[in-house]
Every structure is written in C-alpha cells, then in structure tokens.
Amino acid sequence: MTQTTTDRPSGRAGGAVVPVLAFAGIVVAVMQTLLVPVIKDLPRLLDASPADATWVLTSTLLSGAVATPIMGRLGDLYGKRRMLVASLAVMVIGALISASTSDLILMITGRTLQGVAMGAIPLGIGLMRDMLPRERLGSAMALMSSSIGVGGGLALPAAALVAQHSDWHALYLGAAGLGVLAIVLTLTVVPESPVRAEGTFDLPGALGLSAGLVLFLLPVSKGSDWGWTSGTTLGLLGAAVVVLLLWGVMELRVPAPLVDLRTSARREVLLTNLASIMVGVSFFVVSLVLPQLLQLPAGYGLGQSMVVAGLCVAPLGVTMMFTAPVYARLSARYGPKTTLILGLLIIAAGYGGGLGLMNAAWQTVLTSVILGAGIGLAYSSLPALIINAVPASETGAANGLNTLMRSIGTSVSSAVIGMVLANTADTVGGVEIPTLHGFRLSFLIATAAVTVGLLLALFLPGTRPSEQLPRLRASSEEDANLERAKAALRGTRGRVPNPAGVPNPAGVPGTTGVPGTTGAPRVTGAPSTTGAPATAGAPVACARVTPAGRNDPRTGGSVPAEDTL
Image 1 (tube, rainbow, N blue to C red):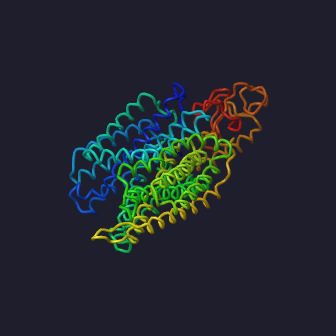
Image 2 (cartoon, rainbow, N blue to C red):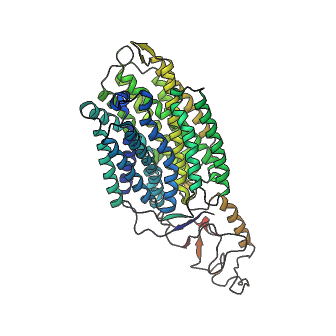
C-alpha cells in the first residue's frame, strides 16, 4: 500500500520558485530543439549515412520517454528537487560529451544522456503542487507545462543563428551552460518538497516499462527507413504489445507500482492522457512543417534563411508563454476541462486557417500565433486535470506518465508526417523536395488529431472551480479501505475505544464527532483515531494527521472540513 508522509515545510515558497522551475523546463526544451537547424546536415557533419545519423535524434526520444515516468516516481519517493537536479546534471554531462566529439557513437551517447532531462517538467509540476498556495498554482503549472513549447520556439532562431555563424558544437556548449545555471538556481531558490510516497522503487516495473517503450517507439521512429511492413518493424511492434501487457499485469499485483494503473484507469486520468497524445501530435506538426516551408526555395517554399525561419516560428513559443496567465483566469472561473476544449478549438482553427496561409512569411507568423495560443491553453490544462484526479504522493509519477503521452504523440506525429512529406515530395536532381500538397495534407492530419482530442475532452467529467484545490488523498486501492474505515467508525456512534477496549461515553473529551471536543485532530484521508489503534480490518491509508486550525503546508490554507472523519 502506498502511504504519504508530510513534514511541515521550513518556509513558504518564495516568489522566485516559479520562474526558476519554468526556466529549468525551458532549458530542457532548448536541448530538445538544438539540432533542428542542422538536421539535414547531420550525415555530413558526422560522416555517417542518413539512416545512421537519425539515431542522434532517436536516442534522445527513447531515453526521454523511458526517463520521464521513472524520474517522476523517484521524485515521489526520494524528493522531487533532488531528482530534478539529478536529471539536469545528467543532461549537462551529455551536452559536454556531444560538444567534444564528431564521432557518431559518442554523439549518440551524449544525446541519450540529454534525453534524461525530460523528467524535469513533471518534477517541476509536482514541486509546484506540493509548495504553492491555491491562488498561485494555476498560472504556475500552466507556465511549467508550456515550457516545452516555449523553449522550443525561442531556441529555434538562437540555434539557427549559432549554427549559421559558428561551429555547430557551440550549440551543446550553450546547452551545458544553461543546464549548470538551472542547477545553481534550483539549489539556491527551490526548497525540497515535504511530500513523500512511502515504499520502495519498483525496479522490475521500471525495466518492463522501459523495454515496452523502446520496443514501441523504435519502430515508430525508424519505420520509414526500415519499411512499415518489414519483419523488423512488425516484429518489434508485436513484441511491444506483449511486453506492455505483461508489464500491466505485473504492476497490478505489486503493492507499490511504478505507475498506479488503477488510478490511471480512472475516467478523468485516462481521457486526459489520451487527449495529451492528440495535443502532442498537433504541436509537432507545426514544428515540422513551418521551418521547411519557410526555408525551401521559391516555387516549393518561401526561400527564407535559417535565421528568418526561426524568427517566424518563434511566436509559437512566445504566445504559449503569455497564455499561462490567461489560462489561470479562465480555469479559475470555468475549470480546466473548459480551457482544454477551448484550446483544442483554437488549434483546429489555426490549422484550418493555415491551409490557406502558406504564401508569405507573415502568414506563417499569424499561424504560429494562433496555434501557440491554442497549444498553450491545452498544455496548461493537462497537469491541472491530472493533479485533481491523483493523490499528492503520486503527482510526480502521474505527471510523468502524462508527459510521456505527449512524447508518444510527438513521436507518432514525426513518423506519420515524415512519411506523408516523403510520399508527396518531388524529385529534383535526385533530391526529394517536399511540396505544398504535402504540407497541406499534414495540416489536415493535425486537424483530425485535434478533433479526436476534442471528442475525448468532451467526455471528461466536469470540475467546479471550487473543487480544483489539490488535496492529499489515498491511492485507488486505499479508497475502498477508507470507506470501510468510515463505516467502522460510524458504528461506534461517535465513540472511540479507551485503552481497555471499551467505547468512551458520548460527550467525553477525546472522542470524535462529539460537540465540545475542541482540539481533536482532523485526519486527512486516514481512518485513524486519537490515542487509539486503527479499527480492525481498516488499514490506515495515510499517516498524516493535521490538527484543527493548522495550515496545510501544500496550499497555505486550513484543512477542509470534508477531510474530517
């Protein structure tokens, strides 16, 4: 059984915590976007074939997908700030390795280490939930969740400028410097979370999930090179299904799983994660299409330089950043389900309008702004929907799984759009050049994905704004124990046993649920009584006891009355 222990924080989170955590997320996104301006030149730069050079990108995708849920769970167990710093440190080491070599194997090794930093975003969201008061939590989580798009959008023109006027290894040196700065700021400004999940790390579960993800994402990423109907592609996909099914059966049987599948199967969590895949698909389409459209020569594209192309796409990230406070106001009034639906509608409008906005650079800027607003709202809504549905002790793992779903969406998007652009390309002088027809077809695919996401969002349960305060509660298995414990306590008619095992008479101080018992403790999610053992057959779900009138360290407010047994 998963338990949670909470110590009172040494002090309230300072005003710099949110910017520092968001900066860490942006640094991770910058690392992911570094190679976009030089993708087409990688075979020449690494003296490798095009198929081998793509491993530089695939390795980061695979390691990020594997590390995200694992780092989230480790953060729940051993401290989210500690794991955040560790993931950034691994990224810095990887960046320094890549900066010092042009050897393909060493470059792939460095890029694999850099992918570990993808776990920083769910860890940052978990830290915010544990430390920030309710009035600051909405906009903070929105900014953190959107940081992956913000960093990607802002890094494109900067990376293009460096790649165009300097040695491309300088890109990695810059990423390493940003990573060191993020580590220093995190250690200086961000306190450790007081929330812990008790138990041990599920190593077999981590290995099983890692194997399943690699077996799935590898053919998705390399299917266009291997052939979608080749034995290797189909064999790996079939093996992924088998491994993930066996992993799921194992996770349901362990007391402290890496991913609580019972919680993940709740309607609000399941539908949010499925919608996240669709949002990931839609985000990556614009990142793939617009830079190519802008840089292709006139007749096929808009003939812009690498730097101009990056500047035209940068409003995508800038708009996502400024959407965070707008999301906070809308979500506080209407709830995250409504803001997710609104974001998806804006994305659909952006892609629909973008079908006719491919004839000038300013039109791509307009498309970037519209899509940035929609993706910003959608990305901001996802963590709020997740944390409202999971225990505080599982925040890191749950948001890690949600980030993984977005990564799966971007991986599928990359494979599908790459295949579409290749099949619709014109061959000129032995070189395949994407066409406007392929770009428009890609936008239609993104619109279809957004439509699916919208349908999923419509079936999410509604959440009143007053219910958006995250509270510490038992995990899915413990909910049933809690109900049985409440029933057992009701059977004592407001009386609890004394040390001799005889129920105290009503009205005696120290009993629960009786007038005149000032100072009686309030129990959050725990069927336990003051000075008495837990009722037989009703395990204690949560060991945290908060006396009446004490502030909840996660929110800065008092414990709600409905948490009192």
